[in-house]
Image (cartoon, rainbow, N blue to C red; front, side, top):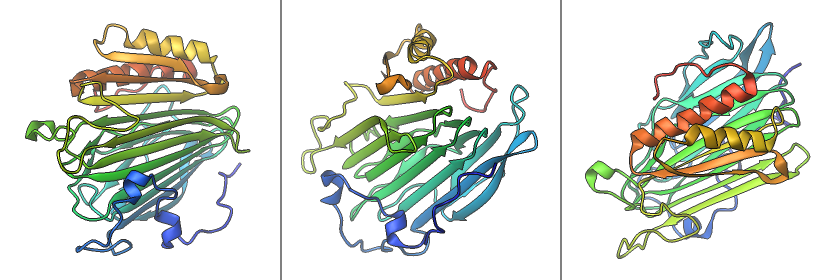
Length: 321
């Protein structure tokens, strides 16, 4: 079967397509006309629109639209345990996110497809003096699909202003693993919580609109004093890294997924919590620590554990710890 098509062919250069909708007030208050390239200028709008479908015995990339600074490396099939699963690396040619940047990524995963999406490197959010930057991520997982979206951390520089909205649509019988990590800043340069605003919204639904889960992150520093700490409904509890993993699946019970995550993190020396998601559609974890090495190791251990639980096969070796 072909992948779920777009309802209509979108005008991807229309501001309504790439601009974030329903900005948080903390971000909307910063909107302004920059003295550099304006919103919508060349190289300020990055777009990826990818569709995947089963062809023969493996998942293929069957539709692709990309606009710099976003692009991809060619798909790879590198997992001997799941040879039909396609691995795609997402790249940003600009080196980082700058003021007035607007990014949008859409990943449409057709019935029975197996897709792993990750990034080439951490997302660096540069210093901003005007306006803000935003990124929209849309993931659609059709019936029987297995999708992993595991990007590298977001690193906000001093005075960064960034908003990300992620919308995930998971059909009954589909599985989605969704990860994210946010750091307190460029710690080696002493930029700990020196950003202006870092905000994120996650929404997970069924195709009929049934809401499965919402997660909200708001991190805002005082514009004048830069402290103490950050304010808003999100906290690092004195740590430098916060990481999450959401697992939506009916291949195993919610309690079994939660137990698997809990067991995988035991002994890693990080502060963490695990819980089932609403409607028993899966489970999620959140962990905190000061060491990026421990955070990456714990997050990877959790991914490996649920990957094996839900596929019956070990996760592949990657370049990442």
